[in-house]
Length: 483
Image 1 (cartoon, helix red, strand yellow):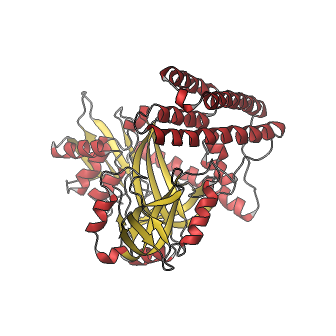
Image 2 (image 1 turned 180 degrees about the horizontal axis):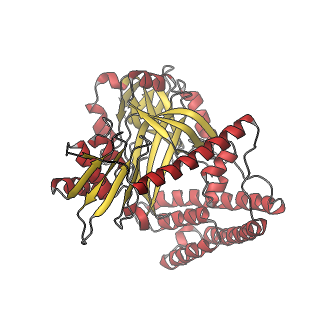
Image 3 (image 1 turned 120 degrees about the horizontal axis):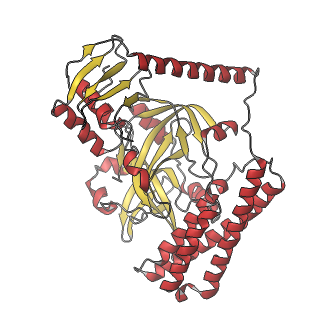
């Protein structure tokens, strides 16, 4: 079990507090019993608890890449501090006594093996054409009822948007904002949480007291976005209402914008799966989405095969954040057996169930760098075509090559081999350290002939397309500029 290092355990921990508590259990010698099986695939033991009976915990490594932790404690965190402490005890060299697999864990292993066998048999039969994959059954009456409610909710949203535009942004006062907040809450009754969150975004913009002119510009953009969402959403829902058996839209992110939460089974059924994909994380950032009431751990990944940039989003609702694992920066290469690709254009959101990890090598960095877009003219054209759609991502992320990062009178710019420039803005993403403070600290070789992951923004007031570098990719490493 050489893989069971402190760093590996830290990665499994849901948050920093759980890591500390797990280590403290080892320091205090709270484990009364420490056992390991002969094949070294199972750790189990007993830890002092708050009551008379000790907590019985175990960590099963029958599948090394996705260990299963179990504990008799009431914690909702997985792994809990007792399971983490059990692993830390092993990693820190505490003595473990050899023992047989407990009967209850043996039974659970057997059930898991049977489920896995059935799944493999079904996949094998589907691949050979002997048994086509069974489609999910849809309750048509419930679907029609839901769509009618969604259309009604979009009608309410349309009235709010039109009233706001007719009254003018300058006439919005505290009473109007309070009314919008109440209406946003009512939107929760119409099965369109995505549209509800977009309305909450507008309310938050209007309550911002700083730089009112900039707020009005962003508010108008958001009103346009809401208007287009109502128009396209209603048209799409009316079409589905007329033909309930018609497939869901998988070419755009409209379903997700309305609030549909895609299940992996749906994505697999729709054929939105890539097999055996290798991904290198190029940037990572955690932020708070107040409108949706959740923390978001976002990672941008470069596909080592085609250079496309995907995004992962780990969502932690405020009410359950303490019990959920908080994602962190990943420095290796993720090898996903099945990469599930969410509908949408631009930086497609992805997810995986099973994946292996390996250390990143120079060949991986070279592969990503070689796949970066060399011509800014083509990149800018693609970005402009994308942001013409008000429902598209306002801040697309691209992997671009640069001949140099240079400082001009107006600030930093990225220059390509043809002499074309991309102006740099340090304010697209809020970060503790400003970009102009970080770039002078980098070696000169990192600022010439490399590639960069950049986020775009269209400044409506100036009409200028700006970028903020998120990381620099050389042939030996990824220099992360956000942390």
